[in-house]
Length: 153
Length: 110
Picture 1 (cartoon, rainbow over the protein chains, first blue to last red):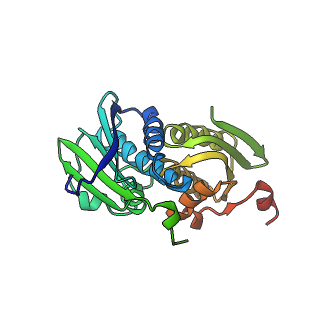
Picture 2: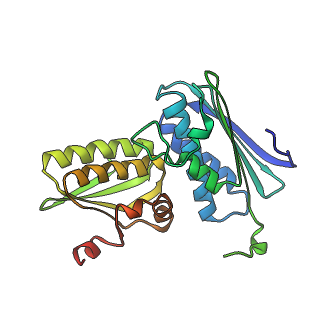
């Protein structure tokens, strides 16, 4: 990751097969891990959404709904307040990343084309690294305020 | 199945339960579409009271059903969404297409 690696307090790394039933498992695992941070239930819900979008992308787009392909998640807590999340697949990759990041752009009519918009909106930083034929890695970071310093509404 | 149905004249009321992600969205889509065809449904009320989570797949389900109902000249409504779900519905702008109400009774009263 191109970002500064701070003081890693804890991390979890896991991989699973590219089937739809694992999307819920992935978001619950990350949510459980993220709950170590001093964040609100609303923030946990946002993290769950982000994971759900990224993992659904791996299954639907990277692997064209093929099962038994590998999805990897690495999640870490840095300096007690920052969550780093990497979601990686070895699928077909994204040819035009800029276009994929446009709101409401989708190659699949049954979803809404908002996956990356949610990821960008609910995380502080997001970077997509992709190589056609090799796979995609989505790296995201979000810092949470220490609760008693929270000054905004 | 994570679904309850109720038929009120030509309006189908569907209550979805659980986390509305790609697993549930696909099942719900097929079930609703079959019922719309079989029962000559015109209007659709989607009750999200028991939905604890929604993502793009769930939003896609709503947009798809909206297009279908719209093509039948019917109306579609969402009721009962809890705050975390409602936030995503508003964020996506879906509320501009499909009106959101607190309860089923609120729709009858309009």
